[in-house]
Amino acid sequence: MSRILAIHRDCGGPATDDDTIYPGDTIPFLTEEEFALTCFTCLTEISDRSELRLTEVNQQ
Ligand SMILES: [Zn+2]
Image (tube, rainbow, N blue to C red; front, side, top):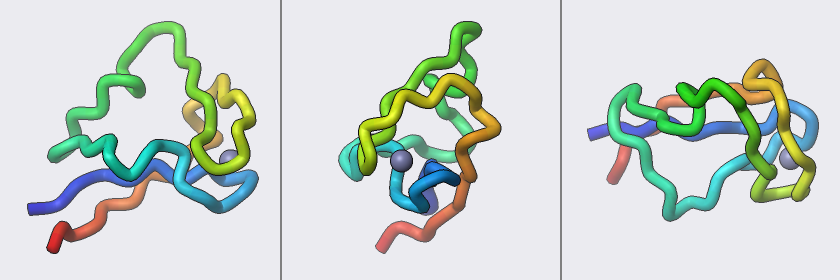
């Protein structure tokens, strides 16, 4: 079992709460037409998905 972790490129921290788990490649906020996300680490508003780096992590 793995999940996708969204890393904010600017601050290098996780952009989503660790409780927010997206199994496989189902990432609801990345498929929305009007992309908007507030970074969980630095609280900067992310308006472009290219500001995120997606990392697949194995779940223990
Ligand atoms: Zn950030």
